[in-house]
View 1 (spheres, rainbow, N blue to C red):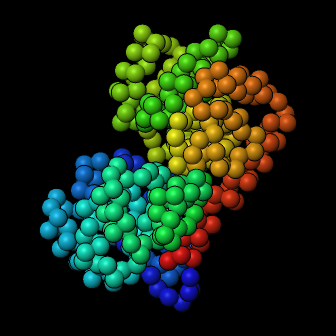
View 2 (cartoon, one colour; view 1 turned 90 degrees about the vertical axis):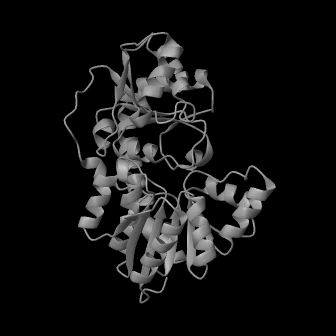
View 3 (tube, rainbow, N blue to C red; view 1 turned 60 degrees about the vertical axis):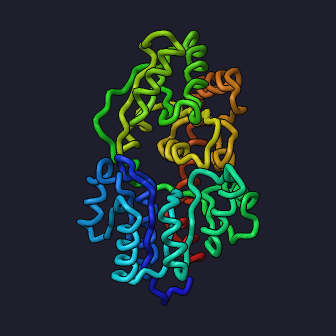
Length: 357
């Protein structure tokens, strides 16, 4: 990218999480490491109900953010206002939003658009939808957040300009630690926002077998899906059990990692796998499945598991438990932490994105 050129970027984010998370930290890194870039944000209307606190904080820091309206016409007027007022010359789309895609294509086709695929790129469900996507995204630059996702995009839309920019991690955020009750037992942790995709059933069955030999607790970060996960756990086990502990979501997720021994990611599909890299930084042992973008992660000393294989998962968990007191593993975890800090740095991510703007 020409360092003398100024870029005003509108990030159209179909994102309304309760916490800003690593996603927003990554976007902010553009301004930090590329002084000729200014960010602006557009979030969905529903974000008023879930994300208002941290979006308000963005505005208080003069990182100007807007909410979509509840009608197509009002969104057309809003987008025209934003683009004209802030002299937007690049639009970066995160998480697909078909209605806004239509508005951008029909009324702002002269703007350069970079489109991120954070959750993979599956073929459209019909030929008509496939043609519509091709029309709406024509002349866009498409970006996969892992090599696996990029390969998916290329298989579906081979004629487009396609790039791979692996996700990055705001590591400093993981140093924010809240008070927490540390378990005396060996602690295993899994993220449970989607019971099936994240393989929570696999984790429970494997840990249930492991606990016959070891004193362990499985901590599940359920978030807004907690009630559903609880119901699924009850169906699976028939009752609540003392060896499973549910944790609420928190922006200071480092609190959980740093009070944990082994992080589990037996996912059935994964575009990237932020949490694994975060857990490496916090020097957890990592047990993860070879799926999607997750299998591309550079993690020294990880315990790799065949997808959907409970027996293999159980064996790798047992090996990780036995290795917890292995001095060689301590050194390996230190090396792994140093490596991911460099390879998945926000500065590296910001530079790669700036190069295609």
